[in-house]
Image (cartoon, rainbow, N blue to C red; front, side, top):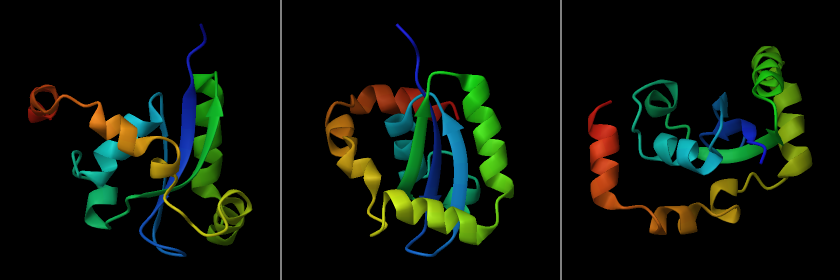
Length: 116
């Protein structure tokens, strides 16, 4: 069974602040951003909407793509987002975010994230 890796873009709002990242678990990582579990850029700028993602089975490919997207001009990123998601919907909920959250064990979450 192959593992999946994701390159993703979060936004604060339509045409707002953008953040590009890479992960091996898209729903978990976006959940962490939405809940400010890691205090960083997305926390400081309230960048919590998943507006774009790509999936690959290679971590090397995912990291290379993330690095390329991070240096792209903002206009290019906006065009990429709007090709996949013209209304800038929060794709987290369209791809199972609500179901992901419903399946979480709250006590386990506290243990996992109290160490960070």
